[in-house]
Image (tube, rainbow, N blue to C red; front, side, top):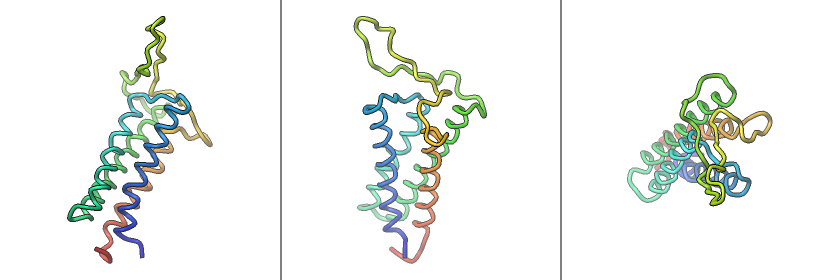
Length: 152
């Protein structure tokens, strides 16, 4: 039966995989993050740390559930971001950032990454939308598995 062991494994695997994908898309394919993209990464960093702590700290169920909540938080931020990208609602007006790359010959040439534009999509779902789907499903699964009382 699935339980805490699987929940702890998911609590480390999900944020590691999603952060890995974010960094591959950024550094491998030039899809630089906007401000809201960063907001989605922060809970995954926390979830990864909490998930690792769940393997060594007592009580592991609490640390695992906290990781699940952090992953779910990232998913909800991703859902909000996807809604902004699709024009379903207004976003944060200051949500645009430069990539941080500086061109010495033309310092104003760094591209601006806007939160209300879809940089990449698959099957009509943006990266923020995929984060919403994977993180919400994963966070809920972790919470459900960690709530089971059949394992220590």
